[in-house]
Image (cartoon, rainbow, N blue to C red; front, side, top):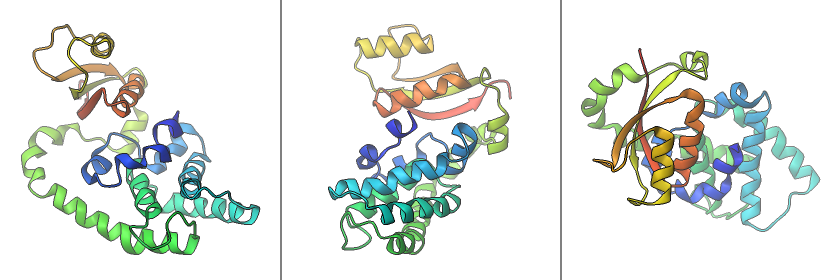
Length: 225
């Protein structure tokens, strides 16, 4: 399910959409170890790396496959604090030649150089532009919603999470009825922007629907905090 939702097939969603890549509700690379197992960050990164070769209609030879696997281990540490969608944005841009003139070529030295020297500085500039003015507008309402990674991991699966979202489904459609039934919302809706309370374990379903463009989550918080 992880690679189904966060695989190279979704790169096009983030390549030119900076705000989506940085604000998407998803875990950082470092959290995959806790959520799915000790080798998951490297395995996920390996899928992203080999996705570059898939775009070029090539297959990895044994030596390059071994080198790629080793580099995935190193990159897992360097991308631990980045969201999955941010890393996907980097690979998408790299694959289409935005950082160099080698389209769909997997070169570990170039990959690392472009990540550190080009992508990370550009990311910082883009984040600063996005956050300019936004912090003052949203800080009062969001300040109480922030939790640390440790607090989130310690949150039990049945904990109640408040979620604000915008429904993207067509009014009266089966998709709308499905989502509203899951969220226990009564139809007809007064607004497409809604709030609901779900268990932490149910957030995965909302993430799936977000990828299917049935809804867009805009905020979340721990109920009772």
